[in-house]
Image 1 (tube, helix red, strand yellow):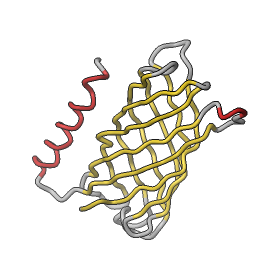
Image 2 (tube, helix red, strand yellow):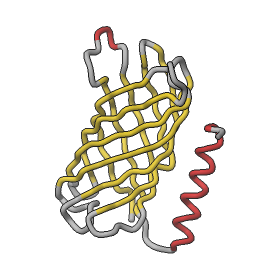
Image 3 (cartoon, one colour):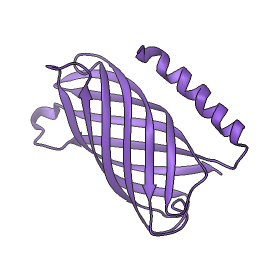
Length: 169
C-alpha cells in the first residue's frame, strides 16, 4: 500500500460518500497539542496537529467520522518531522445527538499515516479520550499511540489536549 496516495484517495472517497448519500453530514475540524505520556526531560517529544473530517449522519448516541486529513508536526527523540494521516473516529454520548449535546463524550480513533523525518515513517494510530460538548465546540483530552509498520522502529505514546469544532452541518 502506497501511503503517499492514501490522502487523495481518502478525500475523494469521503466527498463521494457525502454526495452519494445526499444526507446532511457535519464537517468537523480539530486542533491539538501533545506531550509524551511519560517524563520528558530536555523537550524530547512534542506534537501539534490539525485535522478535518466528515461526520456521517448520526445514529442515536453515536457519531462516526472519517478524518480525511490529519496534518501534524512533531518532535520524536529530538528529531523534528511532519506527518499526514487519515482514519476513523467515534463519539459516544448519553444524548441522542453527540455533537452539540452539551454533555460529556467518549472519543475513540484509529488510523494510518506517514511521517517524514527520523523514526516512525509509516504508522498506525489508536487513541481513546474524553471530551465535553459545548455547542459547536468539544474540548478534549486523549491518549494516543502511534506504532511503526516495521518492527524495531519506535512507537510514540502521547497525551493530547485539543478542541474539535463543528464547522457546519
